[in-house]
Length: 581
Image (cartoon, one colour):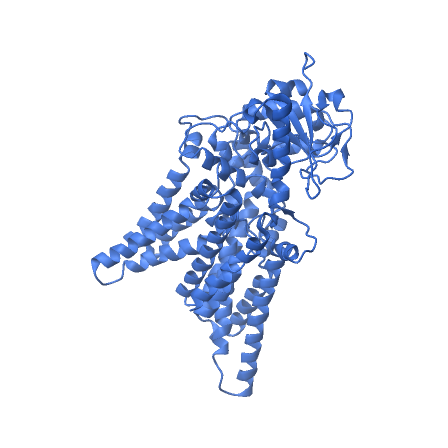
């Protein structure tokens, strides 16, 4: 009953997106400007061992690697928006189910497991990462269940069928999650559990589960591992020039432990406070040292150890050693152990609720006992409400509720970001005036994420990638050198990181979604000869470029491409070639 109720509560929020459709508001950073395109183009060239011609002059498929390969299939059979929303709901439902089963396995009451599971599913985790965070509790439950099967008695066929189902579940989890974001941590902890924990060490089924995870991630990331090992099609990645910045040790430790880090925030400050109170009470009242209290000590200790590792890995002395080693030591992010934080903290919440629930079960006795029961119930309700309000207000749920009610939102919608109608106008105009199809020319975007043009089928020289050739980075740098020279920030940003291979403007560094209005580019420069050498023809600009002719660009049409309710207005500039064409 609790499982069914939780699934219904988790799935009901689909009504928001069903009502809004492409007017739904999402976090565009690292989703719509990047990962969605990875899924889209991997689906387009599925089972083809060929470059992606639309991206960075034909970059290899490694340049657009989706975090959760299994969900590429959704982008093959559904529209991108439908695939994105389906990915979210599959991941959230798996998140609830996994957390519920995991907590029940930890002897948490089904009702508490249901509530904590629903809260976990509603965390504002980015859906493009699939089961990288949402699937961690299910993987933990499946591995533990495999260990349990080793001690089970019964018909051999039934037992083998159960084990096969659990192994298949682990394979699906691996295929629907990212090895480089959280998978390597899950895999490492799984083998560590096999080495250290007696029930796991004695279980061949548990070891089989670890091997299934390993093999599944190897198969899903074979092109990446081939590149790292220098096997076929390898190239020097732009990450070789990546410069890692050090972080103050204690500031990083506190930030990670209390709040989490980017994309993996569990909004756990109330859970930390609750856990601290219960641990203190357990120390003061030794008779309260029950199973949940001891497990909470272990999980809070694990959370602190993870925060310590994150802080240590980005500490200046350690960063200096990593810089001296170079290569993977620089760009491999061992500190991504914090991606396990959402699952870890909501496990702690479940244990805390169960500990308090144990107090509430005592209903008879003297007045003091009854007061204690009321006090414990109040803490449970307050903690769950605080966690729900904190997490719910932090994500896009609030913006989408506002959108349904017809109120103004602070986010940008799917329709506004990709602007399909505006780009269709541009494509039609260029074809009618020049006879060129999209594959006949190359474009770059200014003041707009290149993902919008790429989404609409244009062949882009610019883009967002965490793994493209260093040679291409150097060639593109020549195009944007005039603007980099004006801004030390942009120079450090591109040279020291480089994942965003964009047309930058020193006038608005770091701003890539210019809404239509009175803004215009003043003094913008680019090396048009370098642009031409890469095959560039057009620049799509979100604002008028003053004196564009001085930098070698010609405005094709005075009136920007736009409509009454569009987010952008796009000016199209053509490269003025040396021969005057």
